[in-house]
Image 1 (cartoon, rainbow, N blue to C red):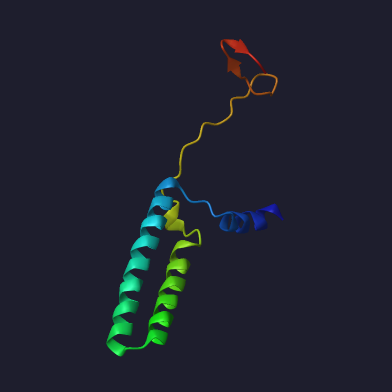
Image 2 (tube, one colour):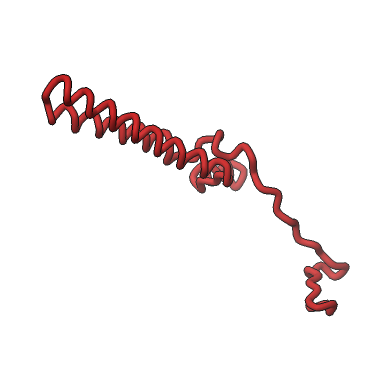
Length: 102
């Protein structure tokens, strides 16, 4: 059962790396500015505030669809974390000021 649920759990955990966070922030800023300008121009050309608001809402929803889910291109540079070091007994060896603690 764990083999079946593991991919689903990975998909819903939303793991992205630091470069992916920077990319998501940049995409959200750029897309919201672009859609804001487009909605302003559409409203100005057609003289319709209702159309302006719907265009802005559509752009915001599109931006949320691009930025919020943890798409795979947000996790292309995962960080290399230090693994645990196990001792002969099976416990972790922790050295603090030259003294083995565990």
